[in-house]
Length: 114
Length: 114
DNA sequence: ACACAGTACCTGGCGACGCAAGGTAGAGCT
DNA sequence: AGCTCTACCTTGCGTCGCCAGGTACTGTGT
Figure 1 (cartoon, rainbow over the protein chains, first blue to last red):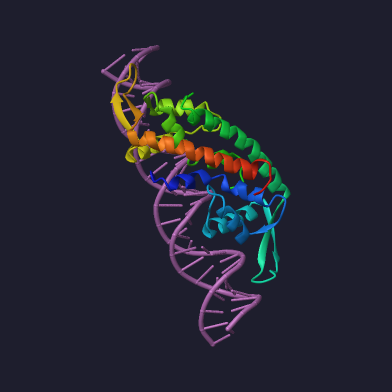
Figure 2 (figure 1 turned 45 degrees about the horizontal axis):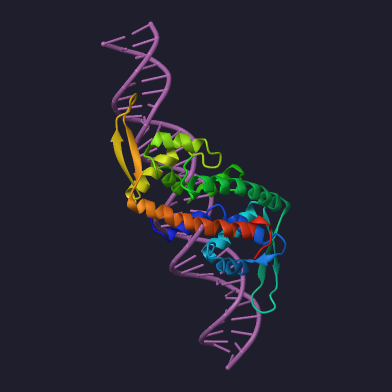
């Protein structure tokens, strides 16, 4: 567990799903696209084995909805978009995240333990 | 999983251990004390069943060391302190955290997906 | 002396989730 | 027909937070 490469993995937990929600907030996207875009974020890079199950979970939770769209070249894609519930979940996360971020900054940031 | 109360749980993952490291950076503390202090942090409250195994892991990882100290009233306490490795792990987390925090702020914060 | 509460430590089993590896299938090209 | 690229999904594993339960030492009241 003390492995350094595992550090980012732990941080992703509980945040990644909301980053995905945010990615489809204004524009529908499909799985492989999300994987590629996240791959460009140094701290959030996640493989297919992480994203596809995550998308399925979010769909089952009712936060995402999907529709199949034929690709101009290649197999059909499943496009995801936010549901009402997903939108409010994202909003809720935003406020929760601000609070959480501040707490961690205070405890860990400077070393001034509370 | 869509449960709201689970939100903070996911966020704690990968962060809690470094908050604990930070708590014993300048002063040795014992398990129950850490549980109580974390309980006062709204976003990081964690029970004994979380903290004691966490402390054991950090000890096995070589990031914490411990010594038994008799209590002025009550059973003996196991006090934890940072090792050299723990100190550098904490430093590493601090820089990693800043980077991670910025990425999440950018992706989720305003909704302006990258 | 005895029971009882308070403090302090630890563990077993469960569920959630990230992830590597492996699997299926359509589209296009030669 | 064979090959490659794209796209989707599943299986099995390890990690970790957490609930519930368990042990033990100390001090207090009767």
